Amino acid sequence: MASAVAKRGPDDKGHYQDSSFTAVHHRLAIVGADARGHQPMQIDGVVVVFNGCIYNYPDLRQQLENDGVQLMSDCDTEILPHLYRRYGATMFSMLQGMFAMVLWDVRQQIVLIGRDALGEKPLFVCEQAGRVGFASTLSAFEQGDFTLTPDIHAVQDVLIRMRVEAPRTMYQEVSQLPAGCYAMLRQGESLQIRRYFFLPEPEPLHLSGDDLKNHVKQHLEQAFSLRMLADKPVGIFLSGGVDSSLMAAMLARQSARPLHSFCVRFTGASDDYDESRFAQQVADHLGCEHQTLEVHDDALQCLDDLASAFDQPVSNAAALPTYLISQAAKPYVDVALSGVGGDELFGGYPRYLGMAWHQRLQRLPARSLLLSLLNRWGDSDSSRNIRGRLRRFLQGLNMDAMQAYEAWTRTVESDWNQVFQVPDDGVAPRRWQNSSDVYGGLSGLLSRYGVVNGAMAYDIQSYISDDLLVVGDRMSMAHGLELRAPFLDTNLVNLMVNVPVKWKVKGLPWQEQLKVLLKDIACDDLPRDVVYRPKQGFMAPIKHWLRSDLADEVKALAASQALGGLVRPEFVQEQWGLHQRGHDRSDILWGLLLMNRWMQQRGWEF
Image (tube, rainbow, N blue to C red; front, side, top):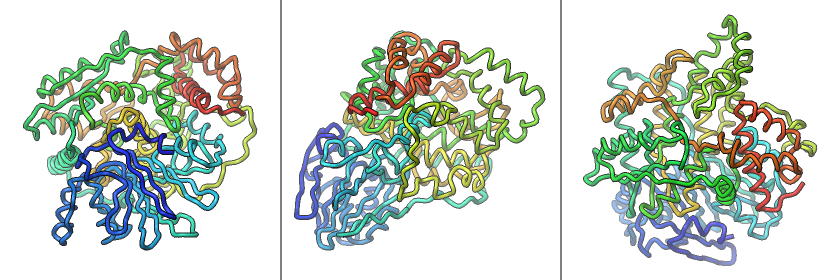
């Protein structure tokens, strides 16, 4: 099992065993990087294995030292056993950071596991045959002595929703601890799970104008600064978009030395997939030590590499540039900061504006005629695909707000029998709720916070945790690089959930104004043409590969037993035909190719 996580921790390896508990740890040494931070760490009858970083470690260390604790290293891992002895499971609410950890209390024979508030670090669990296994990757259980059964509903989730939501995994017997939860295990019992992180109650924010701007700006500066904690080189993934550019600008003001920044450029890609010139402009403005990393787009090799790097697939095309930039940056830095979370907190997606206008435009005259024209024209070839977005928006006007939002975030509207050749055997029951179920799912969050803030809260609880953060963690850790997401600071999240919609999105669906407050803040440090340029997104030219380099691969899939005989070949043929006729089906086709390659690597057959 340990071999499955070896790439995640290339700096050190440790082992612990007694009659009831065994642990192997591979370490990526970032804070207190010397041998004193070796894991598993044993202190005061507590054994701890830990992945991540505790950003408020200096403050917690000072608090322990004020209580008379003598710490032997400069590693953030060392504070965890001491916090556990003093505070028990309530320690998780004290931690600002990204983490997955397992603590073994030798005296009381108790296992305590925990995962960070938004799920930056993974933690998988399997209870079977009188024993419990824990791992940082799902693939570890494939290497261990466990009986595993594929979960076909998880395959459906990857194809239709692009992700598998915790606690579900690709195997029926393995669960993922949901973000913001901990669990305790006593001898002879099952894991008892509890949630320690909740989104705040909806309440009016008594700040407006400059006061709100300054308050949010202070939170941003603190969140960015905290995530520079490291004893190894730190860099920034700089796309030239407002999120990463603002982060670089604020950190450049705080730093006495030039920041390392990186971006990627695909060889031969069209301009709308190349943000390197914008990144260079920002880097020059801030005086960063910037590198544009040229990557060659061998589509088939990329497909193989991604399938290997994912322990369970996510079909988000952002995985590819994340994988490539992590690979290229690792020789220079051991930690990188990304702008993940800026869109979901500050209103960066057009679908949020769509939610604001959804009810008001349901009586739009000539809607059917416009929709008919858009269906005839198909999608545009650009990365932004304005025609396709407008068509999906108009289709959503025929639904209620919840149905519309679900439709806007799916890759395809097909039922089980249209996609799969095997019968639906029913969804396997899950003992644990996912993070959004706590609030009544999407419907409950829309009622709780309103349709716009509710949609953003839903994305924080599901899309971020189970899609974007999975992509970031797996693609970076495949190269032993630690990726941090400063926008996902819990203090910032709790503040932004209740910020009025007018400070996030406004304007008309065809004349959108997104990230209103964040762009206003960014203008204090960045040129206006950088802040207000059109959003591109962190994407690879997969749409075009499917019509060129990957075309034969798609044709072969459509003519064979797709996904080990699980998916109907005619479904693949239908999606491929639509894509060839100008309708962008790249999300579902890329998902099919990636899932197929992932299954082939594991020998899955149905």
